[in-house]
Length: 105
Image (cartoon, rainbow, N blue to C red; front, side, top):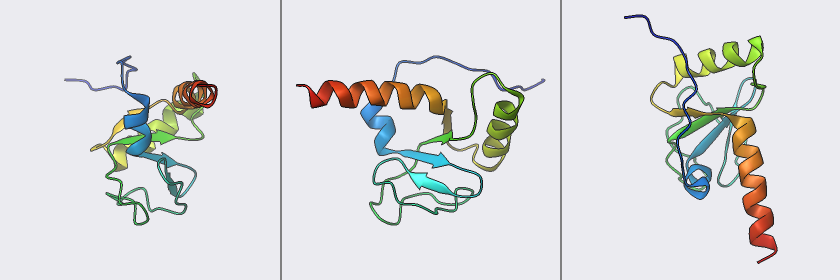
């Protein structure tokens, strides 16, 4: 069986993702919940600051539909196949709309 990365759209609660998201940069990760910096994304299971258990991971530098995107996602998934990899651009757009809506309520 040949395995490949493929995008799948699935309806999710954005607040649930935010509480359990590990955001990966070039070398380290950040907690999506409390924004703790410098986490060793290859091995960290929970945030040392807020104790959020990581279930999701997103690549900050993976721009949509580029060769770098596929490379970044493959690199992260190879190290953290236990986490659900989500599109960072989608997350930022949706969470931004959600925060704006909450602000004006």
